[in-house]
Image (cartoon, rainbow, N blue to C red; front, side):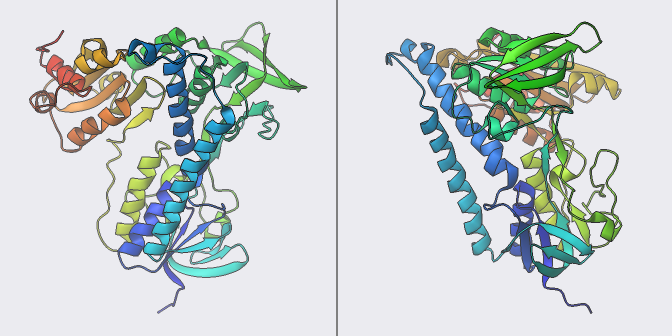
Length: 467
């Protein structure tokens, strides 16, 4: 029998990779994790989910002070201003605490951190930096990186044309920020700098924001962003960006074709999506070829076509979400250990951490109809929710999509200040095959924002109480 240095080697220490490594070690497997960053946690913890939420929270607090919201509650402070350096320092502290926490968990669970980039020599032999190791099982968890826009050069150090990493590290509030891309990342980061004082213009090639989300949610989100002061240039294509001094000039034209125009800004954020990280892995050495979208295909157990090689997270098909990768990390470790690891990809919640937050799980109304379901829909406005009323955060609604014949919940979509937290109940209900009646007749604490989900479920039954 072949002897290996490790039972499991995970390539990448992002949310999928570090979770897979810890779970494998918990199951008694000798485990290592290869990571080239100076800190663990991948894009999410270092330059993604976590730092963006620190900036989002800080900017929300500032806006509550600056726009008079706090004054309504008797909290009066004059001459509010933002100290960008202090805000960035607090962000860095949060990142350091969390990445350090993963390093502690590696030590606690006896996971070996191999520092360096990993590349296959064969299916069980991997070069990590200057070291070569062997493993019986290898999990590819290399995540994703920013998709470049052809012809547009990003220079995060200069801070004029930036990607999401650069937008998280700006040392000033731009006068005019142009966001190329109306998806999750662009809207979140655009909202940060808008709240802090920037004029923000979002340029999106499609005719609506937030592709993949429920149609009513997309329309309501656009209405709210406009109300907040964002300029939305939909059905518009960016054909070029030139930089002169501290200014950038964008060339725009209608997506359907037509006359071009120019738009000037002192900061441009390129946020048109992300792509799987497979470059440098030397996949040819093991005969593994990515699909046309650059993703590594796996079966339902996360095994690739190469025996002993597995893949999870952003590098495989499916939504590029940290929590999806985490669940797959647990599942792949359990499958390697001979247990049964399963991820229900039909119930993966998505959240946009703007204010209000936008969240959804399951099928949109459009997708449910397209799949052949006869549906019934219930909606409830946050304006009619007592806790939202008292908090003065009444924008948005909750929408429940259910099968008309079985009443089984097919999808839940919402816009609310705490939608990212509220969606967990919907996901759990759907995981257990709940009907709208199950949610409607579950007692919810009063007064809470979550009562809006109960009322939306009651609306599916045709009997909401508070509208």
